[in-house]
Length: 231
Length: 97
Image (cartoon, rainbow over all chains, first blue to last red; front, side, top):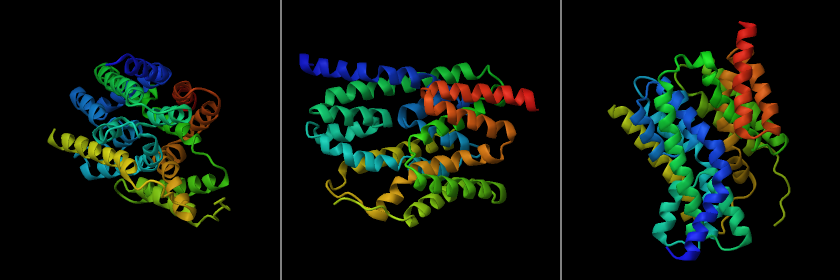
């Protein structure tokens, strides 16, 4: 590794340190809830290593039961992560220094925080693979470590509802949701998604409420009056 | 065990597909109008669909704790707001049940 590549890698690591501090307890929380849902610690480690997607993993736990609904958790991971398609279309314009193979590998660690810092870096100068991987590798390792630690610690914690752990990812999503607020349009989307999801959960057997509520919100957004756009 | 592994691999592939797709899509083709509006709405709509049953029909402590989390999340770092929400739920359950 050349000196500049090393400094770029370190710059990426330093930028992501505050995110690591916030994400480690969340990763541990994932492990705790996962073992309460019946996953073994090795399965928790495998999921955090291979999937590396916080929201999708928490949603999977929400849906988790015996027998494991394989297609449902796969489909919901796809839907929850659809935002990555647009994020990637934006960031891809700034990856001129990435080889095709490196670009393909970089997609694996393109979580929200890495993407945001990479976009910010691209505003000030060229985005280097070393800087990107300084962030991506660090965050990936902490997510795997956090999930594993939580999985081994979680076995002794008993009923999660007693400690409010069952509410933790609801709280997490509430906070993440606030970042998507864009005025009355978002209000209409959220109202439709909330009402349809709650009603379907109450009256329709199975776990269709997320897909139904999500589709309702998207339909409202498509029908909502489109603002004037500067072309 | 095999079902769990299959679910993990399914999630891993589904997640990777969403992350690589945008990077390889034709650049310079930005969706506009209603297509853009619909795509923009996917994350909040899905996240809300996930939490709505517990927030709206989970019980009074859950609903109140959701409000606490929302207010905290507007001002505090994510993990602090989540901790405040969980702590408030535990307290509310002790008080109200």
